[in-house]
Length: 263
Image 1 (cartoon, rainbow, N blue to C red):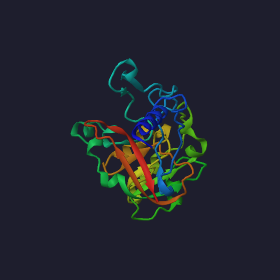
Image 2: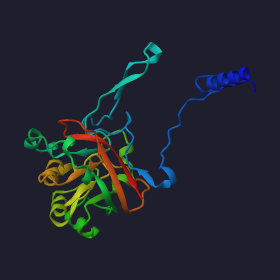
Image 3: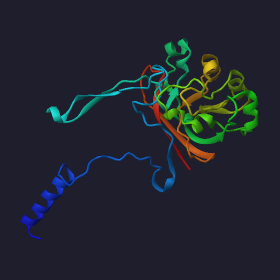
Image 4: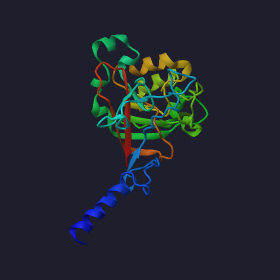
């Protein structure tokens, strides 16, 4: 191929790739599990149709606006976003329910990343009740476990895929939260206790009727971090390394996060 033919070939290729009639640039959105299935994304995609605690019963609605576009002559596309800090998969800082912690600066920008990243246990909660002290006892979470992710009936019902916020979701009752704080080493609650991290599968770790009281139990000591609205569909129960990174926003009491499991 001579230089003229080579140039023509590149021109045809670039036209096809960037707007030619034979090019299909419609992105088909798919869920991926990373190379070899080792990385599992447990973050819900933020969409206009996801449930929203602040706007309930309405869904989140529009959250992205383009302020400059190439179609209108800008050199690039620029958008802005607007949603509250507890949208989708997110983390709660101690200042979420304690005003003196807000004033003292115990916000998302001060959360300990060593707590939000490390070995974690994913457990299945009995599907017939909220998370009570009896349920916590039945899970037999070993001493020394600091991060627990709780999969509940919320996942089975697909509540995070509904438009409306559902107040019948499963969450921690007061006695369940207190039992976790008093009897475990959990510090991350993705539905967990004296564990450092507690992770859960809906927008609140606390049952709706115990919304404030259970949060107060979890967050009072500043030792537990709540991670809420995890996407746990199809993930086998067991041990993983969890990695959750909040945005580093000064003064915010909560933050959307990207959360993954590595097996």
